[in-house]
Amino acid sequence: MSVTTLTLTVDDARVLAAFGRRQLAWDPLLPVRIVSTPSSVGLYTAPPLNVLALFAVPATITGGPIDFTVSLASLVAEFDATIQFSSAIKVESLREVVVPVTSAMSVTHLPPADGWQMPMQALAGDLMVHVDTAVAEFTTRSAGQTEPVQQSIADEIWERPTWAALPMRVLHAARRLGMMSNDQSRVSAATSGPWKRLATARGQVFTRANGGRAGIGLQVVR
Image (cartoon, rainbow, N blue to C red):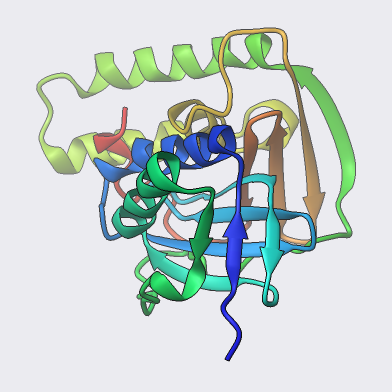
């Protein structure tokens, strides 16, 4: 029986570990779907922002393609070990998990690989102004309010359409995940059917129209 091995550079392993570590505080058991192409590997997560996030790096895969789901904590631990002792991860050493579908966005349903239309370009720094304004509004309006009221405010603010008709939660998620900062890097937006995508140099964030209640958990990740 062949063993599937994923080989990364130390720097790329550190980048993927950092992507995962940013989400550990939200949920260590968050499912992470690992998907490979012949020359790269991507991690899909569905953080509590009602979005789907993708971070991909170059990689060498031997023993067959990868499409595997594990817990976030176990994957970060494996990357940490890889950085210290090796450059290769034996995929079979990771314990696959069943993904409970508890929100509208889940790693069980990935966005399309092609068919993306209407690309629009912008600079990250220009979009960060909108995120900062939304965060400041939430902070002001939610101060001293009960949790249900805070949730209602979060639902209202983060679902508002912003640049390229993306809901504000997509821009907010991109910043929280370290994909977008106040710089001059280029970002783009595109659509494919009900899906919308924000692509940055550091990763991608997806959302889907009519994907259910938008504000799940948003007030706890300001």
